[in-house]
Image (spheres, rainbow, N blue to C red):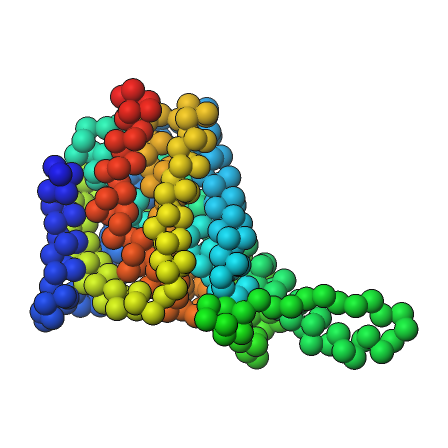
Amino acid sequence: MQSLLDPAILFFALGVFACLVRSNLEMPAAISKFLSIYLLMALGLKGGFALAASGLTPSVVSSLGLAMLLAVVVPLVGYVLLRRVLSGFDAAAVAATYGSVSAVTFVTATQYLESQHIAYGGYMAAAMALMESPAIILAVMLANAQRQRMAAAATAPHTLHSPHALPVLAVAAPGVGGVAPAAPRAGHGGPGLSMGKILHESFTDGTQLLLLGAMVIGLVTGDAGKAAMQPFSGDLFKGMLCLFLLDMGIATARNLPALRSQSPWLLAYAVVGPLVHASLALGLAWVAKVPAGDAVLLIVLAASASYIAVPAVVRYAIPEADPSLYVSLSLGLTFPLNIVLGIPLYTQVVQRVWGA
């Protein structure tokens, strides 16, 4: 119960309450964008300062390696499961959403660890950056494969007349409610959006670029930079996070009505899926003997779901997918569950298993 009394969590709850009672409380878009930029910059600097102090130790390499492994395994497993109830395009988009990460969830977890006096490596911010893009790239590859299967199925009746043609058995599974997936739109996805373009957008996305750039600056400047930036990236951080979570609470409440139209199976995935991903990260961190604080953050990253980076890319790369599907699940359900219940739960489990 004490963990729920953290100011950041309470401001998030205030945002949800304000929206539910139809208050006119609202964060201007420019300020909301500034807060997200500030948090990413401060987080990157903290990670760079920590990496400058620790160096590239075996523990750092192990944590980053596990992060990359999870970034590939989670979306692939998610796609296989989601394909049973969704079209190929929707399954790829949702799998990317849950295979990628939430920066706000990660930042909130770091503040929770600090409030519990649990040490963690600032370099875990690099793990967050590494885990953001692989799921998007995999989703685009899966969507392209789906388009090829659909194209093959569409031309199959013509090719079967040829004596040398082999039958093509490619049937697109229906989406939720029996709705067939939409055909690719001209100018989007597939030939209209090359893999090179997707890779460019993934790796030069503003959030990634700012986070990694700030981390490099922190790494280069070291202790001198940390002392100079302490009033900005240290003292102001908690208050800025509270303001941002207030805004996120309002956005979360606005996405709640969209959950009513979702399949019970998808709602179950949005709750159970992150717990399974967290358990996988827990097992890997235990085997690799990752420090307790780093293990918590690795679990939080595995259990989180993206609602900013993935939608920004996927809406152009996989236009056949329904944006209201993956955004409402991640922002309306998984995000608040992780913020309010997940982070304290994962921390307590790690403390028990690690004997901390």
